[in-house]
Length: 181
Image (cartoon, rainbow, N blue to C red; front, side):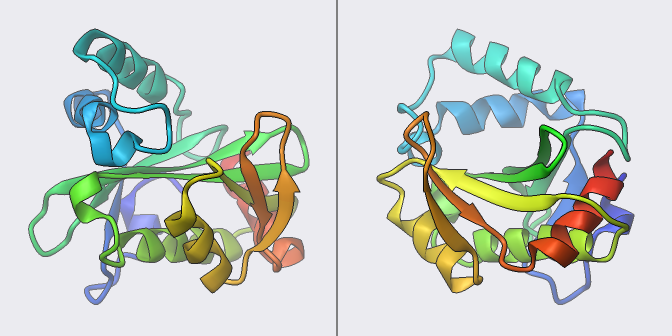
């Protein structure tokens, strides 16, 4: 899934997903400093920590078609960046879907549209892995979102995060694997 042109960015879509690049570091840093974004992830980071975390996050993104893939979530109505989404290989059998949405844009359908777009794009690709998502135990909004999209809760992992799997894993996650290597 190399760039926005390969994702389901129809004119009616609630979000546009753009490949994350080093030029997005300032925005990603602002996400890590935002209290609403980070409320379930240990709270907002200070300027220096946020800048370093943004640099590390964006440097971890792989070239299109391989490894971790990251996208800037954009509001198509305004053109403004509103979040960060990603698909990250976890071993050989699993891909984890991740989402950070600015506090001011939460609860407005952007998260749902992003998860649907990534899952839909993944389902259209060739075979191999299971699609999962995790969230902090206190993040009731993410739990409701994943449940409403048909993800099944599979328990709490060793880090204390609540884990979910896409029930269409045989089809969808096989596709994600081929798409991101």
